[in-house]
Amino acid sequence: MTTVATKPFADQKPGTSGLRKKVPVFQQPHYAENFIQSVFDSLEGFEGKTLVIGGDGRYFNREVIQTAIAMAAANGFGKVMVGQGGILSTPAASHVIRKYKAFGGLILSASHNPGGPHEDFGIKYNTGNGGPAPEKITDAIFEKSKTISRFLIADIGKVDIDTIGKSDAAGMTVEVIDPVADYAELMETLFDFDAIRRLFKSGFRVRFDAMHAVTGPYAKEILEKRLGAPDHTARNYHPLPDFGGHHPDPNLVHAKHLYDEMMGPEAPDFGAASDGDGDRNLIIGKGIFITPSDSLAMLAANAHLTPGYKAGLKGIARSMPTSGAADRVAEKLGVGMYETPTGWKFFGNLLDAGMATICGEESAGTGSDHVREKDGLWAVLLWLNILAVRSESAKEIATKHWATYGRNYYSRHDYEEVESDKANALVDELRAKLASLPGTTVRGLKIEKADDFAYHDPVDGSVSKNQGIRILFEGGSRAVIRLSGTGTSGATLRLYVERYEPDPARHDLDTQEALADLLGAADDIAGIRAHTGRKGPSVIT
Ligand code: VG1
Ligand code: CO
Image 1 (cartoon, rainbow, N blue to C red):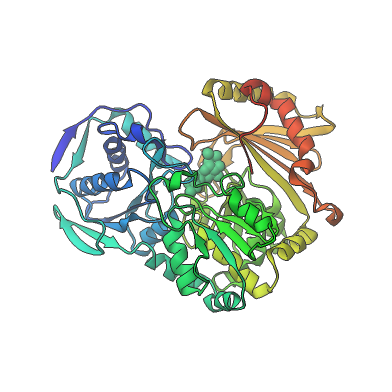
Image 2: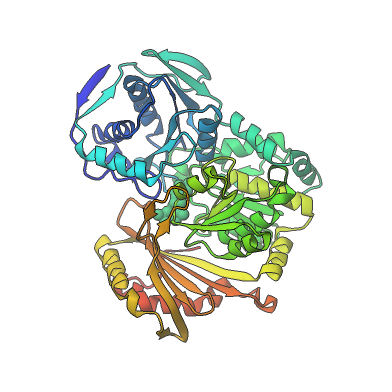
């Protein structure tokens, strides 16, 4: 057991989902150690308890896992549970924490960000409910990181994390577990595997793209082995430290090959993809892209058709920038609807309190109270179960959904790696004029309300301010602007726009065309092009 003297780093403030930095930043001596020690120093009562450790297999994962094990031993944990090879998808880690009643867990991932020696790495702490630490804890971690003067580490040499089984490390038990087994078992309790098996047997074809990230082994085991989908249903299923040089973000830009395939003449019946750490999902039916906001609404409307949700939903929650499509479902079901800030950590209290069953974010995140993270493969299985029960295509389900509820045209425009000063200036200027906007008209659209979203947590009463600027237009259209909290260089400006269309005759418009006036109005109001010097967004989803 060694106590090592250290000096604080000033930049260890966790963002939307943990601490994310470039690998070389994490490779500075003591950088990862300082953060991990700051996490432990923010917690109380873990003596002798269990810590779950796993990651998405990205570059630097194995090194930090060794460090985390040695530090857990020195800090007094009784046991660590580590995914074999250091692998645990984020939802699987959440489940393992819950199932084995661990004190908490460290998830090593920068999620949808690219990986490799010069790309991104991240560390996130999850609490005993399986969910990302709430702001109270992430704020405490940051405070500790600013004054840290020592960290504790045990001299245990290199721990074997590749062989399943238990070993001892300086009095602490290290248990290496199968990363897939517990998760796959959980999925079997939620969904009708027989029905999905029959669907595959009938010739229904799925393409699942794991993007060389963590879901590969999960998809192989669940879709192909347990559900009998043909070999090659899962593609790019080998997790690679650099994700094959790609950006493991399942959207229409980085998974364009999947989109093209699903729109082409040889399209299989259903396409899906997940991200670096397995918590996101992209859903593309044959000939139709389902926006994540719509997917949330459609899953919520149909979840009762599956065993895990047959008792109905207690409520639905969505992040503020996510479209209001799910609100209409909640209204029809007569259940609560909650609007939270961006980031899964804000759903934890609602799920724990039994106020919400299904949650979602426009950024391709959907999940339920089965774990406390969003869950990519879960969303795919829920879709498959619904498709099996309804015997309809994803396109038919979407079309009927819109006919019943109306369609929320929705798009997000990202301006990536903008200089931070310019992005901050834009936001400051916009904030300063919010009060003057209501009542004015831009491009024929009358502004009804404009504010900076603040969330009042109905469970613990905590307040989170400045969570995104909303401009609400007459008739229910809106534009939202916020800065990303997951990037590692410069600032990413996100513009989210939404327009509700009740008329079924106008449900097959091109999304960007349907939103053109709103996009123009948002630019007029916020001066996005002028501030950033960009002609247009880098990513449109
Ligand atoms: C983004 C998304 C947010 C998501 C977060 C983490 O955050 O907008 O909805 O919860 O990423 O997802 P931001 O602050 O960059 O907008 V993941 O899959 O990267 O854990
Ligand atoms: Co992710």
